[in-house]
View (tube, rainbow, N blue to C red):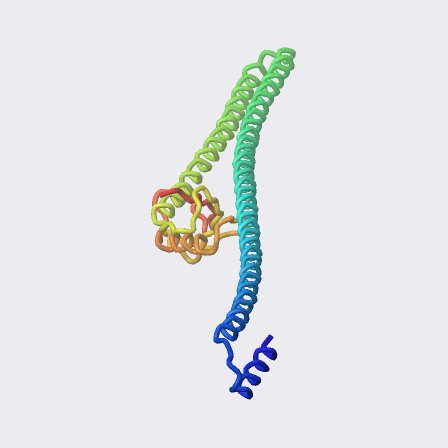
Length: 271
């Protein structure tokens, strides 16, 4: 089309003597312009369609990305929920184990006390049987020996009674010592708990076994959290700091049960 238009213009200039109607080149030029505009419009429409298709692809990709992120967040939430449930089950099991252990210990103490009582009763029964046997034997002896035999029996009974009283006194002293030792450990646990500064990462109910080395008088030499503690490093460090701030530990009144090394259970509280 451009070639034809150029040829016409060249021909028109070369034959200037020929009268040319002004409408002809205008119509040709308009036709060329219209066709260029149509081509441009088609190209713009094609470009617009490509843009729309690209926009739809971007929108679909964005929607897929959002769905993937939502699925990932849901998976993380479910995993966190499962972890929390497992932690709750573990803590519940630990509490149940501790309760059962305490019951077993209490039952063992009760069984031991019952066994001691039965031993005492058996000893008394044996002593009584022996006394009766001696009396029967003495009845066959001469009258002059009866008084001496009875005196000997009275002395024997007194000695046995003294022995029984000594045994009972020893048992009572052991029980009192055990009670005093429990009170001593409880006093140490109480003062350490009072001096504990709870860090932000500490969880309520966390139980840690602590070993303390001390000197007579309660002066603390060192403290360490034993293995098995579920607390983090910051919480374990805060427990040790609480022990050091409790220096000196309770001593007066507990001299008879004092030990240079004592182990107690520290339980974090929700302050």
